[in-house]
Image (tube, rainbow, N blue to C red; front, side):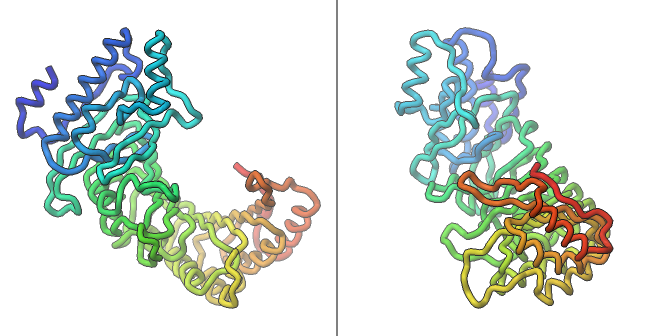
Length: 408
């Protein structure tokens, strides 16, 4: 019946589904469940084929693209997007053939293959739950892509969104112009956290996206380079946005994120991840970030994670003893707390010189860790940590609380 309604509504551009139960857990035998899923996919397919151009698919664990004709071939009851005959698909069909229940597997959930609209295949996390869905057929002459569709599964359950690809060597699921088109039209009313792992979204597009999602509370910027490998130094969000919901943001790129979001009225924490010794461009970026925070009137926490630089050059300088960085610190009357994570006592001692410049600091938390083959390992409050804390207290006599913390 729903397919008939869609076929008889040529001007329909958006369709929403709300199911009483998880579509993957609807009672019935395998044949009826497969038929239900096939009808659902056929209805989605009818909507996305109303316009030319790619389909952007958003789930709680993946964002990817495909061609409109691929949607009708999805086998969601088998946790597949592209129905194929790989080992996963063969194993799933064998389970079905002998009457075993097909259940999602894998620590992070099952994976399946998607045929990207740009060509090539890519593994993504499979869809394993569906309480609701929406499909939009979009024509927008102002968009980087003038015609496309968006399918969003469980839009009201999607609280975290990852913009970009972080796995080197894999085909990107979306290119720069695709992200710009998608975020201009997607609506996620319960979105709370955004991970930004690309440098290629236009700053104005990201500004509009964040403005349309006022309940976002945290933004993590993990981008490093453009798709062609060239460095980027411009603002991430422009023009600056006084985001009404943002409480925390930061990341490993200096001088690009903070100036665009420092005006957020409910900002409480800014986190930085950077090398203890910085090249001039990164040091200038850090100083630019600190200057951007100076007008803030909220009580802020700075969460600073330091690591040892692997760039051996005469140009590097210790950030904490930089005259420019220390002058910027003296203007940060908003900073009430600092949490410093360091891999060595030497690095901590040098950092105290900068922390001591903060005029309104009330709390200083120290986390000392060492690295082993399995990754960072916290050091308990032993003699080394105790000695470092005593040095911190001596360097920060005006700070009420100087103590160590454990991870978590």
